[in-house]
Image (cartoon, rainbow, N blue to C red):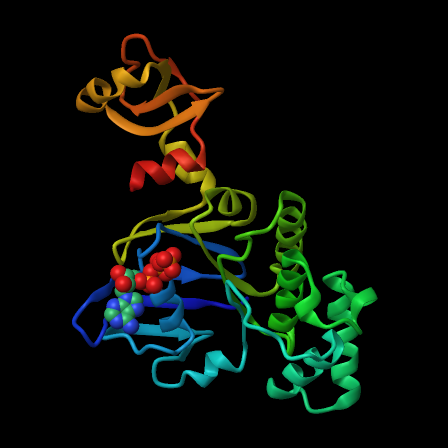
Length: 286
Ligand SMILES: Nc1ncnc2c1ncn2[C@@H]1O[C@H](COP(=O)(O)OP(=O)(O)OP(=O)(O)O)[C@@H](O)[C@H]1O
């Protein structure tokens, strides 16, 4: 079992901006979802974990090792899948993976070959191993991204907004792949897509303005809202009054009719009970 322990971590940038405040998280094998809106501090936390930023305060340990003092103790076990890839040089998929594997320290040619073929099979790109990556579709590029992140058998993989821009089929395929590889390693998934967290993550935290506002399992989160959410279809003109008198969690257009969901201990007049979703939890915390 791998462990990443984040104790009381704060980060202020050079201009004085406080991006993270007193973050405490303990993460084990499996997919951990870090959910938050744009600007909440997800990338700042990822950069601090991988050692690109030194925290202003607090400690980080990976498998017992102090990774603020010795970032390499995490970096040599790290795979990273960024949101977007840059432009690839005009080399084949196989050769690019071979080059990246060498950079990751996989020295023996035979060992590299075995790993690359195995990974290409896993991400379903073996048939196109001689094609250049820049000719791939978005989904194929993301699967290539998984293969490069897994070179050198990492113990922790950081994934930043991985399904942005993928069609539903590719997104499904990608999520299944991520789920398959997560058994023996830590995957930290940073995203603002609630559905991905719901489908993939065994544990999760919501980050807002640099602070963790809640953490637990998706089911715990949803359980907190049981029998607390009420819904009804409304005319748009009714919305200001409802917002002034209720705690509105979300507004959704269904077949052009606005449906409003509110939080309350008892069912407000004219509303009916609705089953909470992780999205409701997210909106409730924001
Ligand atoms: N180098 C920097 N110097 C100063 N402020 C920064 C720096 N990098 C990020 N910030 C600020 O820190 C805050 C958090 O940014 P961060 O990129 O961590 O958010 P995020 O949750 O990853 O957002 P997004 O989903 O948009 O990438 C933002 O207000 C951002 O402007």
